[in-house]
Amino acid sequence: MSAEPSGRLPRWLRSLLLGAAVVLAVIIYAYGFEVTRVDLEETRSERRQTQLVRILRALARPDIFEFRQAELTVNAPFFMPCPPTPAQLHEPDPLRPYLLVRPGCIEPGGMVTIDGFNFDAGSSGNVFLVPPSNVLLQLGDVIADSSGRFTIRVQLPERSSDSVQTIRVIVRQNVGLPRLTRTATDTWDKIVETVFLALLATTLSTVIAIPLSFLAARNLMIGIRSPLLGISLSILAIPLGAALGTMAARFAATWGPTVAVGIPMNLAGAAVSPLVVYAAARWALPPVETAKPSLLLRAARAVVLVVAAAVALFGLVFLAEFLLQAGRQLAATLGALAFLGDFIFNLGEILQIGLSAGAALVGAGVVVSLTGRLSRLGTQSLPGVALRLAEFVVAAAAGAVLFAGIGAAIGWLYEIADARATLLIPAMFGAVAGLGLALRFGGRGSLPIGLVVYTIARTIFNALRSIEALIMVIVFAVWVGIGPFAGVLALSLHSVASLAKLYSEQVESILPGPLEAITATGATRLQTIVYAVVPQIIPPYISFTMYRWDINVRMSTIIGFAGGGGIGFLLQQNINLLNYRAASAQMLAIAVVVAAMDYLSSYMREKVV
Image 1 (tube, rainbow, N blue to C red):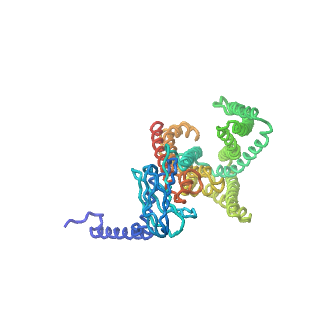
Image 2 (cartoon, helix red, strand yellow; image 1 turned 90 degrees about the vertical axis):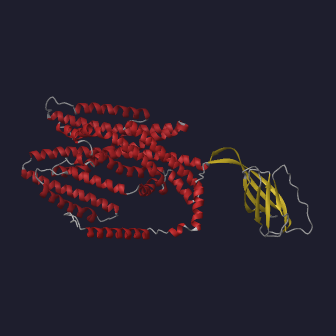
Image 3 (tube, helix red, strand yellow; image 1 turned 90 degrees about the horizontal axis):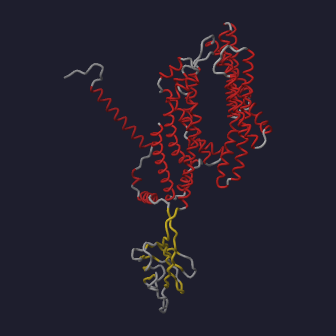
């Protein structure tokens, strides 16, 4: 008997563990059957099978084409009950469609046989009893065979009358060429809406996700470090810069329309301002310095840059006004192409709405940049005691501002009116936390602020990706109303998180050689991204974007169930109404579009990537 190799469990113990694993798996799956209520007996129910067959047959006949139908009415008189004396009934014309009722008279509630002759082959219709009250009572359905005949045996209701009664057959025959049904035209409109809904969502999310993806790339953020003084000053500078930018945008939006009135003036202002900004930037930010600039020259350059920023802001206001006015006029004059004018008008509105947010971001960035230079100067030039004192004061102020902002947000969200609980107490805790950080990390060392930003960005993206667009569209439908616009916003938000994750992971997988080479030359962070990162990520970024468009087309068919517009809204209506033939037409359209998108994206990836 051979001995067991060292380090391995005995054979009997391995067998015992394997048996235990099998028993555990059986218990898990048995409980899974119990939780999911697996009931195979229900699948053999005759009622369930009948419903399943009916639905499958309806789905197999999508409501896409229809014919114009001509109706033909044929009557056959008879008596119920039989008259006391035989009566002469009308003789049918054997050259035209006619009916024979056997027997010609019968007691109420009896069975009769109805034969039809000379009908068009394949025509279908209904059989009715017409009593003297002329109320149609349906008896059954008929379909003519290839010779134009049919036979049906029906039971008559107990409607006795001394007067003659009528068996009436109303048949319908397809006439002319097939045409699209109303369901097909509605499906076409909604599937086009679905494709463009996904296109707009993908475009918007791509524009937002590309810059955010760099914040979630570990290899780019891990090397970013900053002293505590610089971080604290940045926290204080962000709200200040955002407030200054917002105030500047409001000032420009208020006074800009009074400076330039009418389309020509707004167009001239929008065209001239980029030239002025470019000339000012070329002078104030020369590519090469021949000598160290004097203090007066640096002050003049700063003033010129401030003036250039104001000119750029007014130029955007002029551009927004021009788009609004031009779009309104074009929409009124283009007739069938009025949507082009509406599009230009909407671009102007987007620019107006985004002007304040953009100015706030730019203002925050400029002030943060200035405070960054100030913190580096202070860290290098201040003596140790003064530096530590400055760190204590600024860190405490930054902590108080940060915690007070978080408390204010919580107070607004949960409608807490107690300013002491939402502002004062959080500010005190924040000041204490800032002092603690200054004690622990103060001095001339630097902190890995890049990893903090990376962690926060990743956490936000993961949280957004965990919420399905079907849930997001409920919120947006309340905000902007039920329709495709709510679907665009929901898909955009979900796609931003997904694309930012994919983009950032692609950035993390780039070759480190070009990155190290560019960094070794002393390039700035922005230059490193432009020349070392971007050339390596363009092909996969294009591939991910096209793939996301494909995903958004499929997702947009689902968010319609929650009010997001698109074909999903129409599909939900037809399913709720049990109109499975119409639902089949919508499902067929979805399948065709998804397949076409797959082939198109594969072809574009092959050509572009």
